[in-house]
Length: 100
Picture 1 (cartoon, rainbow, N blue to C red):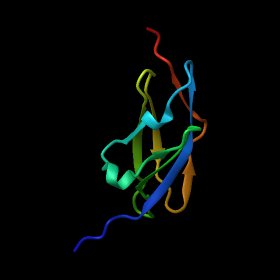
Picture 2: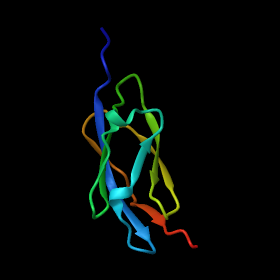
Picture 3: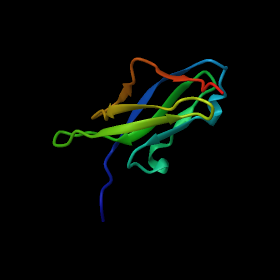
Picture 4: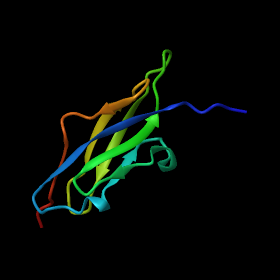
């Protein structure tokens, strides 16, 4: 029997420069965390949420998060998981349309 760490929620807003995007195609990938745990969701307006294993009194967890949208440069940010509650990524994550 093994206990899993509790999870912390991360949210924020993604914006795109250039051609108006279809955010439903956005992939949010948290390095070394299974997608069934992150349960990433993005709304058409670019607001997103995902879960990560929470930090605790003896361990601070930091994750690299990638935002990938076809036709745009990808972006990555480093996130320190909250111990409890929700962390909002600031400033907004910005993707730029790839010039063809």
